[in-house]
Every structure is written in C-alpha cells, then in structure tokens.
Amino acid sequence: MLKVDKVRYLVENGAETREILKGLTLEFPDNQITAITGRNGGGKTTLAHILMGIKQPTAGKVLLDGKDITNLSISERGKLGISYAFQHPPRFQGITVWDMLRYANPEITRESACELLFTVGLEPGKYLQREVNKALSGGETKRIELATVFARRNRVLILDEPEAGVDLWSFGHLVKAIKKYAAEHDVITIIISHSKELLNIADQVVIICDGEIMPDWESCNLRCAPI
Amino acid sequence: MKLSENEQRLLTELIGRTVEGPGAFSLRKDGESAVLRSGEKITVTKKADRPGINVVIADGATESVHVPVLITKTGHQERVYNTFIVGNNCDVQIIAGCGIHNPGEETSAHDGVHEIIVGENSRVVYTEKHIGEGGRGKRVMNPQTKVKVGANSSIIMNMAQIGGIDDAYRQTEIELAEKASVKISERVMTDGEQRTESKVIINMYGDGASSLIESRSVAKGRSHQVIETMINAYARSKGHVECNSLLMDEGKVKSIPGLNALSPEAELTHEAAIGKIAGEQLIKLMSLGLSEQEAQEAILAGFMK
Image 1: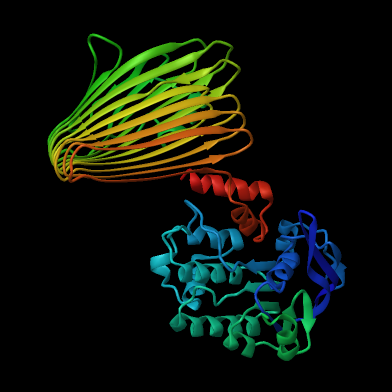
Image 2: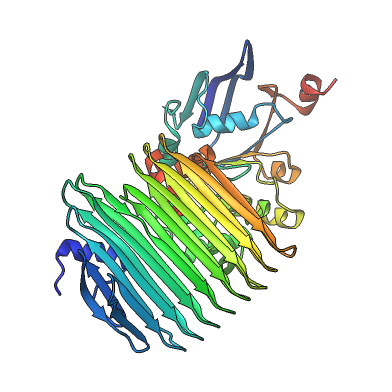
C-alpha cells in the first residue's frame, strides 16, 4: 500500500505563503485504481509530484508498504518501481521510442516493445525508431509515454491526466489499455483525471479541492466554485 | 605500415574501420603519407607541389574513399591540402577525419583544407570527424572545406568535433548550382577551457537549389563557442538553418544564424535555441530509474546523434 500521511505543501511567493496541500492523508490500496479528481489548481498534480519525489512535502510523510520514502530521490523511487506518466511529456532530440522503452526496461525485447506500442494504439513499424521529438503530435507523445511506463516493472503507476491531448477516437482505446494493465499487474494505479470514463474504471475516487479531500462534489462546489 | 594498438584504436574511433579492407584509402600520419591506395574508380595520388592528396572519382563510381589523418607527436603542426573531384552520375562516400593524440607538452595542430568539386547528377556523403586526446599539449584543428555542387547533385555533410580539441576554427563554404542540394549536420562538443568557432556559408546560385543546416553543440566547463551560419540565396531556392546549443556548467555559446535573400523567389527560414538541459527531460529519465548523471548523459548522447 502507498500512503500519504498529513502531507502539507507550501509555496512562498514574496510575502505571501500559499498552502497547496493542507495536511492530506490518503491511502492507495494494492491492486486497485484510485482516481484523483477535482477542480484545476486544487493540488492534484502537486500530490502526484510529491508521490514521485519531484517535489518534497513541507511536512508529512509518504509511505510505501510501511517504509518511509519521503526523502528518496526521483531516481530512487524510480528504482522502487514508482512510475509517473507526465500530463505533457517532454520531447527529446535524438532519443527514439525504442531508446525510451530500453531506458524504462533495459531487458525489454523488440517483440514486447512492439506489443506495447500496439496496446497503446501505435503501429510499431512506424513508431519504434522514431525520435520522441517535437515532430510528434500531443496524442502520439501521450501514447508513447503510456507505453514507456507500461514497459516498467511497476509497483506504483501514476498517470497524470492521460486524456489530455488524446483525441476521442483514441481515448476509448487508452481507457481499455489502462484498465487491462491494472487488472493484469500487481500494481497500485493512481489516475489524475477529469474524465468520466477514467473515473468509471476506478475502485475509489478521491476529490481534492483547495488542497483538501472533499467527501463529495457538492462540498467541492461549495468550497471552490467561482463567485 | 604497422600502427600501434593506440593508433589502431584512434583510427577506428575516427573512421569506424582499420587500414585493412577494401576501397580507396589514404592515411597520413605525423606529416607522412603512410598508406596511399586507389580503388576501382577512385584514384588517389600525392600532390606534387604541397602536402596533401588528389582524389579523382570517375563518372558512375559507387565506392567510398577513406582519408584519415593521425597525429601522435607532440609539437607536430601541419597544413594539408586535399582535393576531391567527383565525376557525373556518382554515388560515393568520402570519409575524412583527424585524430590527434598529443602525448607531450607542445601544441600539435592540423589545418586540413579540403576542396570538393561535384559533377552533375551525383550523390556524395561526406563524413568528417575530429578527435583530440593525450597530455597537456594543446590540440588544435582548423578545418576548411570548400564545396562546389553541380546541377542535380546532392551532398550530405556530417561533421563532428566530439571532444578534446582545445582550439578550432572551422570554415565550410558551399556553392550550389541548379537543383543542387546540401544537408549539413554539424556536431560540436567542447569542455574545459576549449574554444571553437564555426562558420558555415552556403551560396545558392542555381534555381531549384536547396539547403539545410542542422547544427547542434554542447558547451561544457568554461568552454566557449561561436556558431555562425549564413545562407545566401541568389536564385529561386529554399534554405533552412537550425542551430541548437546546450549549455552546461559555465559554457558559453554565441549563435548567429543568418539568411540573405538576394532573389525575390528565395524561401529562407531559421530557428535557433540556446539553453540548459530541460529539467522535465531529466525528471522523465530519472523517473525511469536513471541517476541524474545517467539521465544527463542519455540526453547529451541523443542530442549529439
């Protein structure tokens, strides 16, 4: 199980201090999909960054199987099997899809790399040797990103808005791929999303609003609705 | 001609093969012509009036010629003139390069002046690599390459200075005739106190000519680079310049991409970017379990491909 315990995250901007996460406590059970949703700016991606080690919490702990991993670096968490699929994956120059899949899993075979690309709706022959560069569309990079994290031996899989930039035709395919991956692997899956289709495949849905967990949408609307 | 183990290694790093094997070959070592071999349709001879070689490639040739230079003595400095005449309807590769292993304290230098004249309907791939290594003595290289490309011909130029060169002034000048094209991929990596200046000029004289310059460089340590490119379009022609540089440590880069449209029908574009490795690129690779150092190396290796 992955757990965040009383996690706070403060940002200082000049004289002003803003509390992005306000003492969040949340459990992500094994072999379950947890969807995190809520209004923009509520702290969802900050939470994902804290889970991956991209940001350090101001206070509180992150525990994986009871072990405190709060101070572990991104690389150390990566080695523990925590993976993070970016909302807007970075582009590279000279790094191919095959290179990325090999970084994700040095033991991957060409055959399984092709299978993975097929799973996320990309034609292997067309994409395996392509550079992950700015010539690719947003939807293509998202699918490559998903294939890259699927290639790993994941203990925790964090997907940050997998729907962003993916067209409606491809999106149904991606939802199926995520659901299938979660069902076939011993993995804690965390999806940050606004999509009804993705919330529907989750075992638990957590609403985060203004840095806190809300019991329901009504409370969220009361707290965060624009005046 | 027997090369030491170290010379063999440097040669292989430079041109991807050893002296043995098929094809035209010229090896210059410490100022002497160590190997001089012609091919089926490629004739390689020593110049009579000055240091260097003439390479004459007959019409219709589909071969390659290797012309590496090795300098292994400290204090050895030379200026060498190589001329390549490529006939019509050829499909050839010219593999050049210079490796300096300077074992001592004095400056070793190689100024390679290449002139390439390409006939009509030919395709040339020109690969040039520069490597420096060794002791405290400076490694200096000043390559000058002048190319004339005939009608309907193309040349792809892959030029790399991948490390160990203390001072370099690189000059490349291309002339394009009607429907001729050039694609230049230049890679420069500097470190420490190294200085490199690279100047590429393309003159498109013929209608339908096209050119692409793709320059990527990495400045590490306290090194300094000046990357200057200029496309002059005198006719109905197309050109694009792309200069990308990565800064690491206290490295400095001055990038000057230039376009000069001298015909109303010219279409010229450029883009240039200088910056550090993007944090999100590092984070992405680190989230796959790579250390920061490994992630940085992977990004650099890709960038310099």
